[in-house]
Figure 1 (cartoon, rainbow over the protein chains, first blue to last red):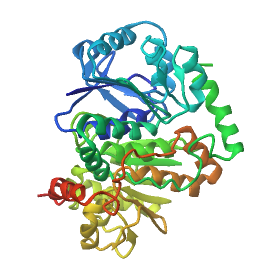
Figure 2 (figure 1 turned 180 degrees about the vertical axis):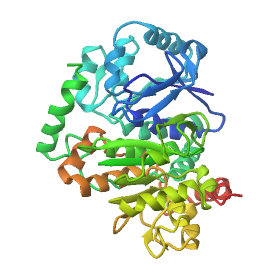
Figure 3 (figure 1 turned 90 degrees about the horizontal axis):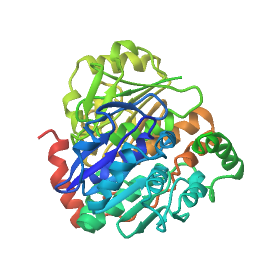
Figure 4 (figure 1 turned 135 degrees about the horizontal axis):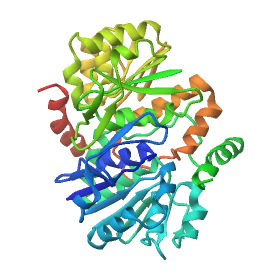
Length: 213
Length: 213
């Protein structure tokens, strides 16, 4: 089972690494980080380099396609090599998936039209603009299309997918191996639970960037 | 505020990237991935390369030291360049921290002797062997020493530290930005909550590797 995780400049590291940490541990998984050019890309904060090991053309038909998001998503919203690869890979994939604003890239490539999907809470309006049926759920499974909300939701998405692919016991074993028994020390993980001034602060800081302004 | 995250061959990616995603977003943070040699290291599953941007000697006095774990931890349990760097950096650090079996490296370097600490649940006995006061808590703060349990606990550790460093509102804003409202789809995140056959399976598979056998 080949799992292709797309990388690009200014990707959010955890969008990719969260589900990688789960899916790469599935029995028989061969995980490969793909991108337009092999070599390092810098993640959105700028202080971490992740390695693209294979060019898109080298991985034409993965079983699982995973598109992370992050501020760099805005550079991949028009047709080009990434969209062409996504559409071709999607024709034979078993699962086509995204984390955070990665779903905007899938939607812009035409792969979420009329499908239920989710994204980072700040980008939900944009997802609808691109023709997907916007939800505010953390994980959405619509047929073979699995989308996750912002950043850390990719871990929950990976575990959901692991259960579907390999059964619940294997997913549980992976969860236990990574000791995923989350206890956030603050209560602020969603716009529904965070204090309103914190929501306003994040909306002001990140909203403009996510909208590509 | 300089934050140094140690990398080495066969590190567990999420151990480093989880807290990175939090701490690198603190106001004034300058995050740098350090290691014995600049260049890529492969993470434990083998299919992801992370970049070491600075040699240890280039980052002699970081404010925050963070040591991740993973199967590669076993190669850093005897005195050498990493231990010498850790001891020197710890003399002036504000926070000395670890995720997963990273605490075994800190303990082997002599930095946790007599201190309360935690680690991956499979490695707890070893932590005591190295002179730390073993706990089974997810996050342990003992003075400036902050240790986290396995892999995903690094996110909770990062947010705990973010609150101490920059105040609760900033930590909450970072949590909301990364939409950290975890909803694990399975119940298996700790040996107390996972089904006993799953605990036995993981213990058999990973225990021997973590013990360096």
